[in-house]
Image (cartoon, rainbow, N blue to C red; front, top):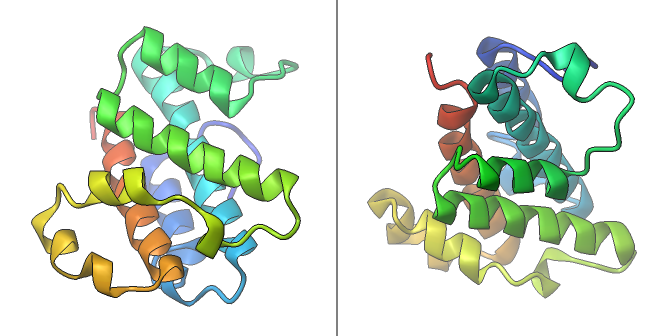
Amino acid sequence: MKKSYSISQEEFKQSLNKYFLGKSLYFTDDLVAVVTAHLLVEVLVDQCLINQLGFKKTKVFEGADFTVGLKLQLIEAATLIPNELLAAVRKLNKIRNDFAHNLGQTLADADLDLLISFAEQNAEIKKGLRKLDKKQIFGCVAAYVLGRLEGYAYPNK
């Protein structure tokens, strides 16, 4: 993935396929799964701000300490994504923060209920989700959140 904050939808899809889809259910390390999902979420959060608010990529994030939480506050204030998607993205951010501040954190310790409820809006996901272990559930729901968020990050595509 490029170091730039702004990437094309095609570049995002390549990164999603390379680093997450297909692998998320088989990550051997919970930390890798969580950080990978979070990095992809942050790319889409940036793209929401750039593409929907018309921010110039070189002016918005350069030299600033924009946390994901602050970016999500901007997205909420401008109502760029639906509230239930925003809640799911915030939950992914919280899970990532839990991992960042607790070396012993595992997905078994994570509260995934909000993410499961969000993903179960999709009938296909709802059929088999609860039969999976927590790592597999995380992979499925994170991929679903990423897919939903992508539509808002690239609204004219």
